[in-house]
Amino acid sequence: MNASLKLITFKNISYNAFSRIVTFVFQVPANIILARQLTSDDYGIIGFAMVFINFLIRFNDLGIRSAVIQKTDLSEKGLYTGFTIKVILGLLIFATAFFIAPVANIFFNNNAVEGVVKLLSLNFIINSFAFLPEIILAKELNYKKLSLTQIVTGVITPILTVVLALTGFKYWSIVVANVSATAVSVIFINILKPIKIRFIFERKIALEFLYFGGGLFLTGIIGFVIFNFDNFIIGALKGSEILGYYAIAFTWGSMVCTISGSIINSVLFPTFSKMQGDRKKLKKAYLEIMEYTTFIVVFGNLTLFVISKEFLYIILGKNTDKWLPAIATFRILCVFGISRALLEPIGSFILAIGKINLLLRSNLIVGAIELSIVYPALKYFGIEGVAIAVTAVYSLQYLIYFYFFRRELDIGLIDLFKSVKSVIIPALVILVGFIVFSYICNECSLLLLFIKTFLTGVGFFIIHGYITNWKLIKESKSAIVNWRSPVKYLQE
Image 1 (cartoon, one colour):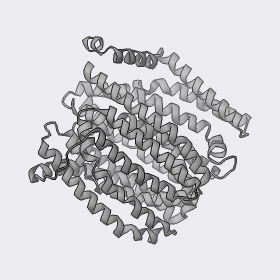
Image 2 (cartoon, rainbow, N blue to C red):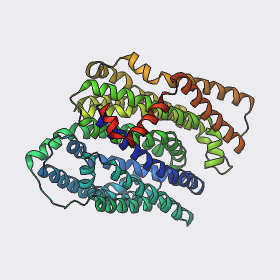
Image 3 (spheres, rainbow, N blue to C red):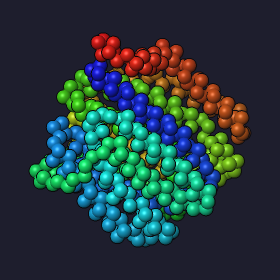
Image 4 (tube, helix red, strand yellow):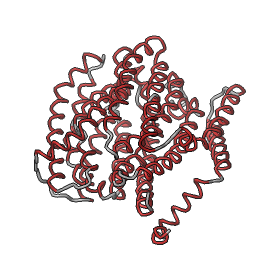
């Protein structure tokens, strides 16, 4: 990665990081309050409704957004053709949602899901009008303005959700807040980057976008199966209460992955689309990203794993055993969160060089295996078995992508090991300490929560820093200094 692009990438990741920190500050307390106010049945209703919404989301884009961003010579006709397709799809999916919403009643023993699906479907129309400013800002790598939009959404959603939940709206608090925040964010981004709305449809350009997006669309459909089939089966066979336990475990087990992905991955695709022809730069960039990502997600998920009992009992359960039935599932999905976070950056690189078929083949294999084992895992081992199955199957993609790394980026096992080795030793030390500590003391208190969090954080940080000679701190400090003095940085 050349110096100027590296500096831009660092700035954009920093903007994203700041927006996610702000969102995190509001979202975490809100999620804790919701966990205390709502029941597992409420979470089950939302979780099952999201199965339908997430399925429809795949048809709402058809890979058009990625196709437009990836195109190096985007014309005005191309931009507005993409927008026209997006609006048409939004209207069609909105209508489809109303048609299929009653189907939820066939699989789920709670009629509330139908109304939730219908209200959430408004987002398909609303989001269409964010397409133009989002594309322009992404092509310009202007994540400063994009992050401002994320902050607006990240602040409004949790505040409104909590207010509604505290006033008795139950699961509707999540739904209404989501739709309202979406509308506000769309208005806000159009104020930040006003783009004249025009409807143009060039058949040749549309076919080009759809050809690129077609493989990505099929990949998304399979990805939907991978991430939602478990919820569907649990909800259909075990009901809303058990699905609620799984949903709370999955939400928090994936929390660090979701945050790191929104910070890093959204920047990677448009950034590396600009350097898609230089494999050496892509290789170096990928390994650098892996090193930083590994540190963040392993540290975050390891901490959640260590404090899982106190977290579920004290923080989410308000000193009750309300969420303790999810503890084993939660710990397993903390491991899933690590695996997922380390895999997702690969998708940005594959998209950047246009290898959509590789993503499609990988997801086909993983999806087929998951479909075959999730049901027996649930039947014989409960939601813990589902969590293990999902984690194991998703991690199989490492084997699938290994050949791609060797062929396209000349990355071997040694290169990958060097990127992650610095977190292996501190992680093992923390896990051994956790096992010993749990054997000696099996109590659950707020004091233990703070002690475990402090010891995990300090221990991981010191051991990692000693092994790497404090490399991440030095590089972060250097990047901050260079941000302030970009001319000097670009001359190096």
